[in-house]
Amino acid sequence: MNRSSPGITVTPARRYASEVGRGWPVDVAPAPGELLSSWLHRLALANGVPARYFGRVLGLRGASWSTRLDRALPEHVLNFLVEQTRVPAEDIAGLALVPDPLARLRLRLLTVSQARQASGPQVTRLQYCPACLREDHAPYFRRGWTLATRVTCFRHGCQLRDICPTCGGGVAPSRQDRLVPQQICVWCGGDLRKATARAEHDVQQLERLLNDLLRLHVAGHRLPGKTSLPTLLGSACFTFGDELKSMAHLSIRDRLRLFRQLTDGPMPFHWQCENPGAALWARIARTAPTFPGLASSFSKRVILRNSAEQNTRPARPDLTDLLQAIGRLQSNRRSRQA
Image: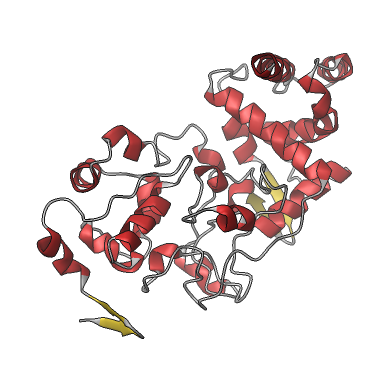
């Protein structure tokens, strides 16, 4: 069956492999920090196949084929991509989110029932920075945007977005059945790159502190004890209306609201048996306002305050070592730049 639109005729994907043989006509290099699904969508477009049908070329079914590959890249698919694109296997594998030490903090995919309950045609929690997409020569989605702890763009300081600004539908480039780039909404054809508001300074500070803590975790600087930092952060539940949700299940609107509440003081946690994850969120939020001072020297006031809390409260995850490591990390950055 052929699908037609004005001026465009699309050949069924099941015949694509036999038409081009071994090696696809157009090479597309992965962009720095790009998400695997984003690269695959750009690869499909460059070779004349809408993203919706490109999954069949890879032997995959379902409308969310590329999103699943982000979280689980089968070896046979990886080998096929290497053969057809001539991109090294390690470069392709590096675009996926596996193995993933931050898996507990990755945004969750919406289930079918959740998508049906949404006001618009939402299908995923894919978020993005409109300003970055405007600057890109070929717009692409970043791996860092898949973290639930990311609510702003570090480069532009604006809020991220996870819906189309025109129709309110979810961002679903894998369902695109036209030969158009990823910044075009699959539901209404609108441009996803309309500007968002600038994020509050306190929200940005909290987010950057979280980001540095997680980077240190990935680099091997771990909290004492058996429970990892991402697991603790991801286990805390927050109250929104009558529902309790973890960070990874919240929309960007709710996460921005949560960050504002944390920086303003109110703690919308579900406290149950002194949940250590909620306690850690509270301590990070209290530390965030002092974060800028860590660039030059670690604040003794923060160390003393954390020490005092340890003497008066049950044992909880200690931030002191990680915060000191952040101070050293940023001092080393400045030394190298000097």
